[in-house]
Image 1: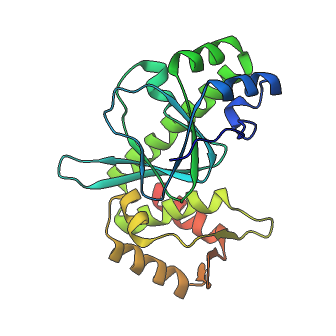
Image 2 (image 1 turned 180 degrees about the vertical axis):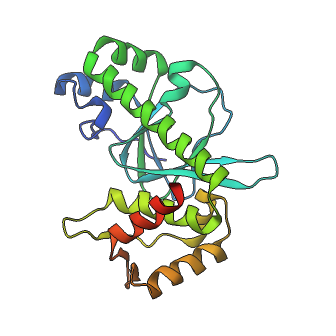
Length: 232
């Protein structure tokens, strides 16, 4: 893979509190690498502690059971960060990370340097704490959903999470590219057939619509009501 010698860390959300010259200094300390779609970036249970900044492309955070079943946790685009948990607590990786797009560009920063940055700047420290808090909250939500909701309702909840990231002022949301049924199923521990059936039901009710290149949530408020009803 080629090295990126002119890329910057200016788009990385966690590092935006830093002055430009400090980000440039950190960029020079990073190990840069391009990844192809499907290529592994971080290995689950690995002892590495580097923090990965996603400069270009999108990555997926996944875990695998002893039987090889894949569970997908999150997709993170350019500007995001992965691997900070291992850097903070010194424990092995709890999940694997793989590239979703060709040309995904990752900047690897050593754990020691990352911790020096995080502890040396209060705004970066706060950003890291908020990021880790968000991970914990989403994990708690998923545990509750897996324990209390049926498969159909879990698909509704996951669609709602994706839709809220892409909410538009008119009360709709556009998911582009169209979520793959198998990927949605992996996120909520169900089958692609169940996902297909749920999407068909939502389309029949006018809540979602599939276009040539996107899944449109036509009525976000109704989807929210479906999820709220079973969570009550």
